[in-house]
Image (cartoon, rainbow, N blue to C red; front, side, top):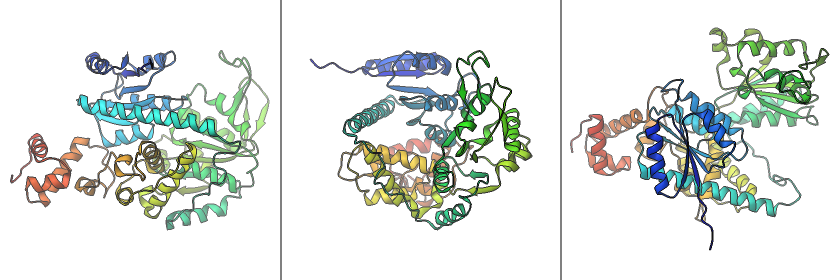
Length: 468
């Protein structure tokens, strides 16, 4: 008899009643459930227990609304190999928080109070996607040839004017060793530009070393960047080569530079000013021979004015500053790049690529892409793995934060407000459509893609007026 594979779900929530309610429901569905009342306890459990999926509350002891602790856990989880899928749960949902969670690797974002059927459907979908992904990875490993995965793959050529103009400007300084600061929203492709710059530079034969400084703790900052000698501190069991030394003769990329604290900024400034540093535990001065590229999605000038970023450090890293446009500002690239990403994922999983249906192409162009290129890549990967048709359908893409209907028309024309919840946005969309349809509920329901009774319940919930 074939063994039944039991999936393990880890619930991370500081509310005992929430954990018990979900646990009882999932156990009735045949899942194995383990619980943690904090991210720290969850980390301990993950070190000794294999988990198929995580249900993560976003707020714990620090506060009840920001989601900072949940986001911090997602950053930690993202650095782990073979991290399980994560569905975020919160009673204080906002579009801004949902976007951040999805950018950090969360698979779905559900508001409390949840509906059991919707929660179960999301869990089953994420587990199905994870299983397909793992199956294709194993298949690709078995069929892998002794050549690189991207061998024979063409580089993508940007179609939009704004990207062609940016590439021309970058080309002029790629051959220099001048420091570069790349700015732009999260997910716009700053790391891809860094790789392109390195390949076009005179240092192309040297290493490209990338460091997410936002993920470095203050205690390990110097050890990571400058290295340490055995015995330099309690846990220094062996010599460690720092990132500056590793990048010698090549390029050093410091991502999320704005997240550095002022004390760490001072330590970085010294090596950028003099080119000199010392390995922890050694008195010998080393010289850096690395071309520096930094990136941020923050406004560093504003942080300088607020006293949160050193002005002298800004001058050291911004010899050349380039602003990468958001994906929604590169309309001519969205569909061609989606097809390029789809083909790339197909090669990765040893699958045949599939064409995009016309309604998918239209939806991709109208979607606001808050997660930019990173989100587009994730959507195309998921669509490829979940597709059962000969072409990619709109249902395969699951563009969760926008729909190809009237609600999308309202939301896609401007950035999502950071101070509004999903309920606020829903109310605004309903008000807009009701106004356009002169209060006729049947017409508004058709445009919003919901049943008439469902719209009536929402009208009553939000205290809106209608004509019936």
